[in-house]
Length: 147
Image (cartoon, rainbow, N blue to C red; front, side, top):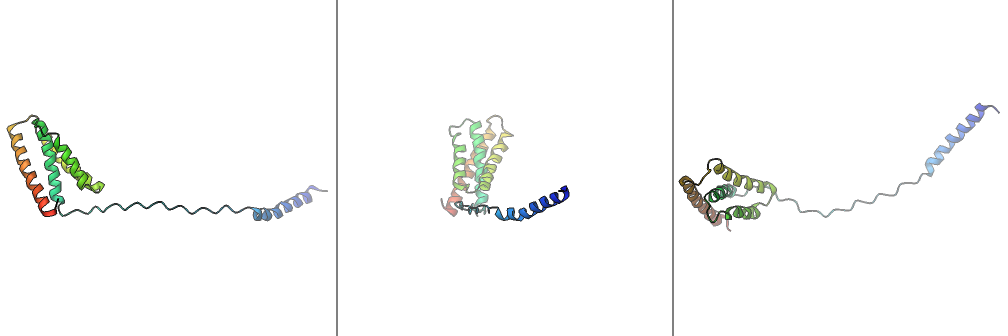
């Protein structure tokens, strides 16, 4: 027997067997439907409140007072950062809003940190003005918007 007819016969057998092999393959197991994750509540929209301008100013005033009261070693110096924290917890309903409130506080703090190194009469005057402005803002906010 010559090798050519044997090779042809072998090739024909292999080619004939391939469709059979393809038909014998098992189908993969059906994929499980992905389990639904519990849906999280959608984040609240970052819509500015009608009192945001006054609230941001209040945060700046608190930041200024935090620096000045500490600089002048006033007994209530530690209260001002705590008041800001309470304001952020109460009004910072979205991350962007918390960032804006913290940014306003930091602006007020840094504005006086850049200019005052020691407690002076001018620092006491600025403190008195900020206390008056903060009181006015808090009464206006509470009177108009509740709280």
